[in-house]
Length: 529
Image 1 (cartoon, rainbow, N blue to C red):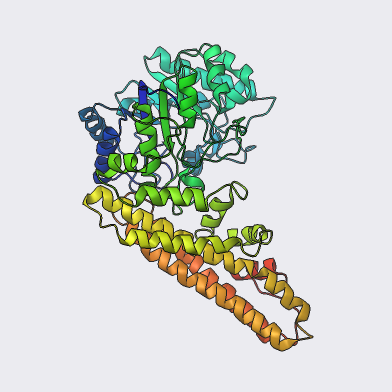
Image 2: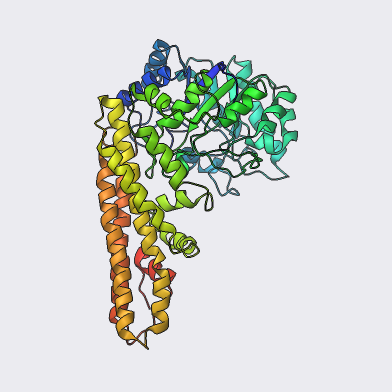
């Protein structure tokens, strides 16, 4: 246990780039609660989801405007908070390079939407972007990204010089620039090109890594901000992975709920600045289901929670709702009984993703093939138990209501994902049927009938999840595209069932095709031969 302390920067970040729209009523609820939890800064990851003056037209309806920027500046000021913009000027420039008019500036050698920083026009283009944000937000700082860029031995110095030059331009204008740490942490020689006044946002979403914090301090950077994540994007609910990533310390145990552990590394290294990042608000990842993690980080940075403090559900509940509800306990159960590290780290991300992208059914079935037959038996009892707990919760007020409906959606999505995964596990029976097709036609027919039934049951559970998730995202900025994606997968599951029944009818004539081929034909509508 560490002693209590208070961080100087107690910041929080929301992702508005990936389909979330800016809803002022929702933002007010967030700001009130964040302030109560001890946060004093709010980072808006906007990227290109902004109504720019320099580039006419917006990428979608609902993006932030300069009027929104002025409004939230005043609202955060009322709560003794600052608000600052976050964009990207090298990698992760999807919003810009999906537009034909900017295609000439895209790095065609990269597999991501990345600026060609070798182009002589790149600096002016990047400065136009950051100037839009520095004009709209009077806070005197802007985060310009730079993370997860595809660089080579040949161009890595050019990358560092380009990003450092944008930072220097801003410093010369009296603006504080911030960059993500990963590229210059993984290749430490690149730090030599950066002014030490540049803010380093050291992100690590997988537990402990005191080494990087010490590294940037030793290199002389004056402002280092520790950036853990709720990891709500990687499963059904937020949780901390034990796996090492970007040299994270996999040898130091981290429990699924310990979102504050990288912040604790900052404290031990004498860095008292933190930013909890919350990424992605689409494909079922509802931000309103992640507030237990937000509360832990806020209370920790405010000196009201010790790192690794276990028996704190009531403390989190009182901070969130002023009373005890099932919310935090359900979060903890999902973290510890469902999203335990008993399979590869992307398992739950893929499992959830099947409900939103039908083409992932093919790749995920290959993962499902490798698990034990009883693997999915752990899910239904937990879901049923947690659903009964939710039945006892009558939410009070808008904030509680949003948390309640979000948790309902989490359970519905988990339930539907389990049903789909179970149907895909039917591959084993499908394979068995292929072996007896011409020796035992009656059993062959029964097996295929059962497999088709599993896909129809999965469709029914998905349709239920569509309804429940629809309620949860109705009046918030969450992407409504979710529902359209889920409906497409629902239709696909029916097509798969129909394809299986079609093969059942041909049982005495045509051998069963490979299961992945059958899935592909159902998903893409190709003719099966």
